[in-house]
Length: 197
Image 1 (tube, one colour):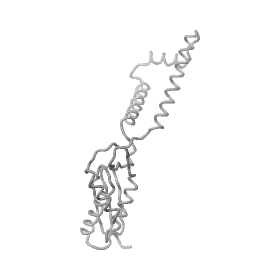
Image 2 (cartoon, rainbow, N blue to C red):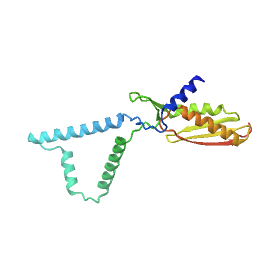
Image 3 (cartoon, rainbow, N blue to C red):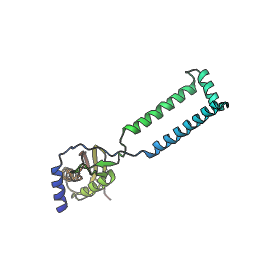
Image 4 (cartoon, rainbow, N blue to C red):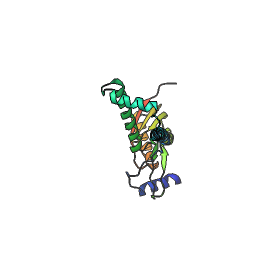
């Protein structure tokens, strides 16, 4: 009881819907791959330019590429395929640059700006599942926690379904409040009568 009372007191000090930044993914693999590819391409081009300045012939790949770019028409299939691939790669890199990532983390409220906290969605689902199993009449329940919605699907083996749904609503709403999330997800509860085992 002490823990739930302190959680409720903590939750009351934080306004509901307080805005906090999401955690950003480091995106090390895409950034590393792009950096290595660009470094290799620029290094090879620089080497070729320096060797041309030293009165050596340009590499065959650069002469071939220059000839292809000068002679191949723009409506060629391979030109279109290459352009589409470049556009898709650019859009993917832009999406990685402007989105936070780490969708599995839910930002939690804190009383100071120096500390940031997050809760994994799977851990939140486990906590809410345990809360739901404490409701009388619930035989089994599946809880899925998204960034905007918590979905609970329960089976009841005794009691009226409306009573079980009402108790389950209250238990899960209380559990969601005690998670201490910045953005309280909406709750969707469905209860059905379980089959005989």
